[in-house]
Length: 230
Image 1 (cartoon, rainbow, N blue to C red):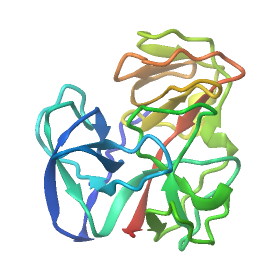
Image 2: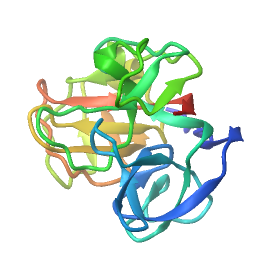
Image 3: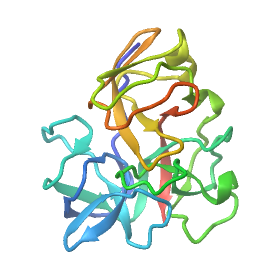
Image 4: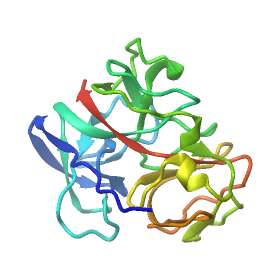
């Protein structure tokens, strides 16, 4: 698989940024919330009263490329248009004009700093909801092919996930893409990045912090979408 460079979060139509200290590992393009005085991290849930804006990408060296670490200064864009991280809920693609909220992928209470967006209102993005934080400015294909249960059970600390042959291609994954490890019936999920790919293996940039059970839990591909900050 090719290593496809992600688009910078900042666009020519982005507003100014300001700096907060990262309270948790936060991806470029994630929607962030205030955690405490002068600190912020990726929003864990759709309930985002303390939402600030989107973590801006930078050229500094980090422990893991594409992520701010705890205690690092993080630039946040609060207005205008940005390239945000998005994923699917169900078999639903994004259409320009859809309203977006932070995705909530567990049945428990996730505390992980995800900050990835999905259609607002139970995949009915035509209507603005109280939890909408952005509006899509372009169409993005996000069908059931972008998430998969076809993999071998993995453990916390694993650096790769073995999948059914062809799954990476079906999911449209490339080296460098963000991906969510989704524990469907627990409180945990992890935003990671694809480090390596074969027809049967997805190498993880960050060791897994979530144990997944094949056939019941999910791997979720993450895309970028040009959005207007609300």
